[in-house]
Figure 1 (cartoon, protein in one colour):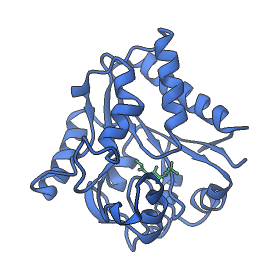
Figure 2 (tube, rainbow, N blue to C red):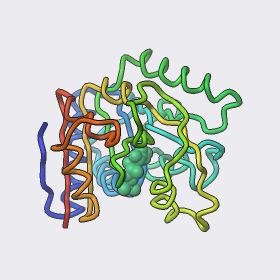
Figure 3 (cartoon, rainbow, N blue to C red):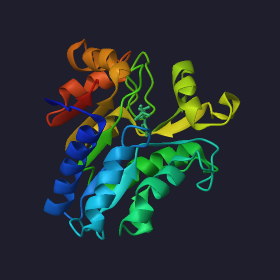
Figure 4 (cartoon, helix red, strand yellow):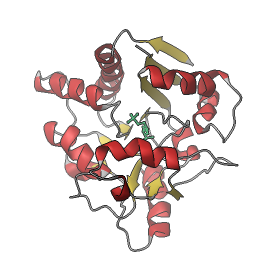
Length: 236
Ligand code: F6R
């Protein structure tokens, strides 16, 4: 595990963007695992800036996102598909058909879970997975639990997650209470993992996750067992 302390959010974003860009430059047909949330926005902005300078080509890159709210259409501004299109995909030359976000609207959500895992396997697995971390230690929408959920599954969102995500909605009542998320196994099978955490409010959970016991009550603690984990954090 490599832990890098960034001096500011823009330093964190540049460092994370450097790692993702290097991955795509070295292996243009990389499978990138991507995250939404507020933390990666600066990273995506930096990537777009370098793309506009002609430094990176995404024409053969493939992406798989971690999660999506159940019940939100891709056109809903709060959906993670919408977020990814707006914050990254439409600004770079990645073919939209190369970008994958689990569907929150599938008629058969259980089948969607199985199909999403099969998709990742058929793509040959994830080369580099970008992760944020929730205040309760969630990664993707893998919430604290009695056991690590391995594969893509449907989750009921915890109260603290609903409250944290309410900032993106007009009313907390609009926050969906279910989501579809990649499981811990899908995440842990990524060849490389890049975890980013920003702000003083993330200090405690990062310490617990990286240096505390490995336990499903802190889902991100499993990352301690990953052979190629880089953490970039800024607690300023
Ligand atoms: C988003 C995701 C979540 C976030 C986490 C941190 O796709 O999977 O696990 O990474 O909730 O969110 P922010 O970055 O908003 O603090």
